[in-house]
Image (cartoon, rainbow, N blue to C red; front, side, top):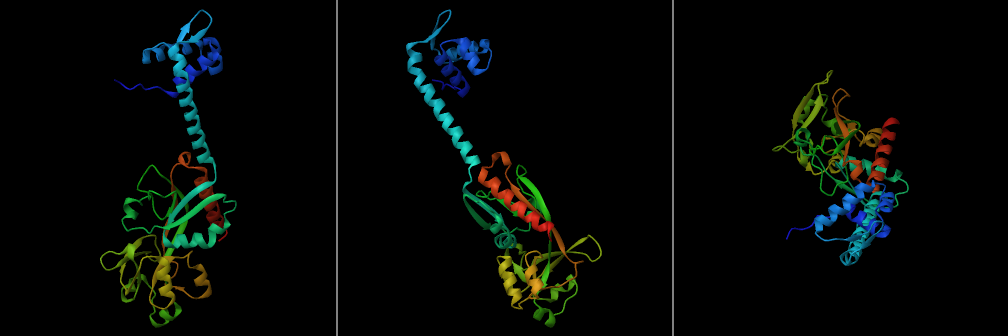
Length: 311
């Protein structure tokens, strides 16, 4: 026996006809042509193989089958309406979990400078998770975790159906403590091979990291293979080691601005030797986003862009 495929619109029309007892009145309520209402009814009865209404010249009355069928139709329509209301509430209420992924440095920046600025968070639970880039992500695109709502990172998404919105340019360069540089002077990136560098595990290729810098006086980029005695799984730990005179660290300038201002860390090179990355935010299309995600996304972007403008 073939399963009937009954559409909600068909059921709605049958329900309105039953309430109206008249094709013309039903057409007015539904806002469609009377001939179309008659066709919908005829097609419906033909599809199920049973008469739902007995017709007279002026009125329609339910057949015994139609009388038994109508409560089922109205129940389906009621559940469909509840489902639509649930989806509408889900999309428009500021309630539930929003998960933000970003590299360690960005997570620390959000925690320190951005999250506290978000007002009227409602019943949202904001979850911050670390997602450090693997080297191939710069060429293949970054993966979007299954439980992720917002991903802030340095490259485009692997999934082209996602939205990637540019935030700002982000400078990364080498830093060390004053004590380390006093004992181990350095002036150019090609001298890094002689120094102890604090490595990031996600950037490991064999036993080294690849650090990238602008060639002095040009926009050309050059890669430098660096080694060291210490490997960390996040930038925050690597910076703590650099503060303790254990070597040179590769980190975003924005993240260490307070340490640079206080003199705890010092840039190893002039501004000619930096790697400028595009900081982007990646998310699903807004029409698929619940209200809570749109709210957090807008608040984070507005605050970061405000701070960028006020640098």
